[in-house]
Image 1 (tube, one colour):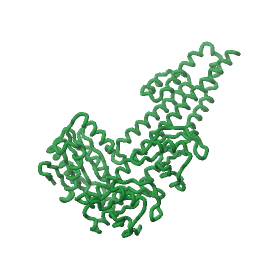
Image 2 (cartoon, one colour):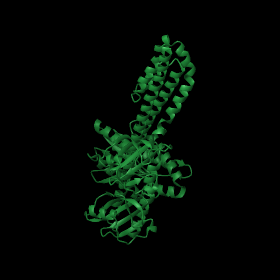
Image 3 (tube, helix red, strand yellow):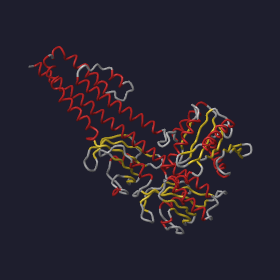
Image 4 (tube, helix red, strand yellow):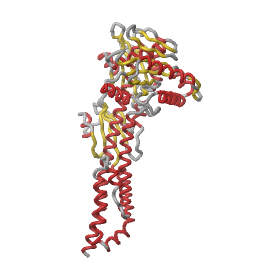
Length: 515
């Protein structure tokens, strides 16, 4: 009897230990995944806002000295709003707060003088602004993103701004609304004033949340993971991170019961299927106890190190000679594989443009840091598709996406192993050519331009590209200046008729062109 009782205790303890360890690991894995996801969303939000500010910065440079040209103003606000769908509305305001142009025109505020918080803050600071949420003159809860406009003499003329609506469909709403779980998980975003910027319950948008310990931590700039009980009494596994540009807190939450449901079902099945084996084991408990406990102990050791690189191999090496250990081993291998796979995919996604598969700005920054560390010379090719807006307007955004993917293939085929092709905007691409001087870079760019021009793309037919080239350190010792030169050459190629390559020449401040 003592042997039977001892055997039962051992078996029950083994299952309980396995369940407890896996439960804890699943909780930790879910917490880690939620933090990684919240951090990714925070960085993606920063990228979105940074991209929006760059669009406005470029527009401000274009508008300098043109605030009295009403057709140009109307065209520019429409271009900004429609180019990337970043803004719900765009407006140009002069130094007296008078609205010079708006898009869409349905807002009917052109000619009015505005005194909304976003307008007043932009006028007061005379610098790039991302406002806190407020209710606009038209009754929309929004955030206000602006960039100042200066004359050639440095005089402040006003600003160009875009709004992102919080209670209506917007690019930011779509970015935050694509959650990867459908099991009661959700995300929400709060600003530094505890105001909800995004929440799946639209009725709560704009609500100020007080007496919430998690939001207290976000307001103080904390990031991390935690188990909390939400306002509905549901225990949630929570990851939270800070968007650096705005100080917004991004929170990703998953119900505890949803995270543990697979483990509960698995352990129930294991218990049911191991009863015959347990009875047999009890008969021979005296001589088989050690052999039975050994694989369980090894699997438990592996479960405690699920985040280690060698854990999967160690689990595979466990000799699970009986059914229960085999099932446990399979479950753990599946869990380890999913955990490592998800983390690996998240890391890859952080450096890739999802549409084209090319690198993104983060990939570009990493390459520049590498070149800096190795003290490498490099050339920059700034590439833009000519008349891409016409393609989108004529054929739709799905065909536009196909055009971007075809151009990405051209870039991938023409690039060498060490070259770095990236998509940095809607139809804007950059190629870094390490160890390549200006003459060779121009040949590569010209070959690319000719190949693109000569190739038919389904539905669209032929397209053309414009390319601007500059070289580091030949053209400038500052990397930012090199990129600025390549952009200038790109815009010069556009001005000279498009479908051409322009090369920056520092000695004369001009460019050499080919077409």
